[in-house]
Image (cartoon, rainbow, N blue to C red; front, side):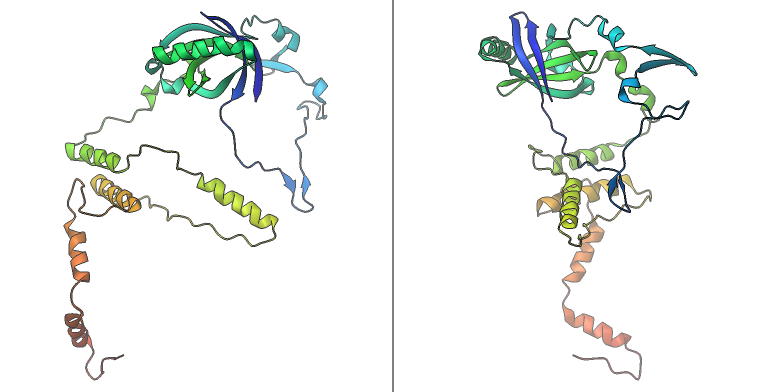
Length: 303
């Protein structure tokens, strides 16, 4: 998506810019089809009162004040609403970047300088934001609404983060669980798991569901029988000991990293060590044990 904005208004004047989406949606889109003949099935716009199909020219906007009481609002009335930021991104304040709660940030856009005339003021504002470690709070209009945004920098470009208005953020207090008691060992176990799973770069993660879905579509398009994707065993709903679960998670994280050595976890695991020792026991005593268990009158099988 690209939107044309005439200026970014700031202390440095105005900067002609273009608004470009900073992210892409790579989701696979499906169509509704008639399975008998593969014909596409479309949605019909039908009036609920008379049951007649209506055209786009007959469809307008309305606000439901109460049941059976809808107030029509025309496009002309909406166009007359005061929207001073319709063609501008107005910088209204500068704040510390860390002072903004990440939960308020939404869709992200790149700001592209529109033409050579914008190059110098664009670079000047970007350099000022970079050197001051500040971010700019801005107002702008998008899809018929005034919105709040946060201007920051990424490499050599400026970025606009759409922000939720304060009244759009729910209070998380009502979602908190009832107070519970934790001992120090449980907290240390969680910290050990965090240390084991720590990464400096998360760019290596892939959408395995999307990969499998694309392979399925490709196979069916070529007339091949799709292979069943590998699925992990589902965890049971059984309640387990928290310390054991943490310890197992640490072991799995280490195994996936190919780490060897002693287990640096919150608890030793003597049971597993004893089991490993039994596997290294010489085979000769095991043969004697087998011979003792052979029922009388039967000769043990030999290779």
